[in-house]
Image (cartoon, rainbow, N blue to C red):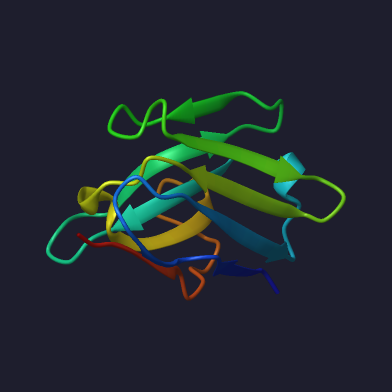
Length: 118
């Protein structure tokens, strides 16, 4: 059974940093493209960072230069380092693999809330 559990969110002031973690079971993160997604209230889900099995990373323009995605193959975990946080980064963050033709086959975890407040 595939399970993804995100952690590391919290309250932070603008300019602060957070490191999100995604613990995966039932799926090998090094063998699958993995991404960090976020969804703010009233907005669509947005892919902010993605890492391929070969280690290539793609970062959304809105967070480029501030967010970094990485993984630990031995621990089967994926991370999102977020620096220089802005209020517009406030959202629930999830990790997941790539969607298939009919959507995501990997169930969504609980997510972790990131709130950047003035």
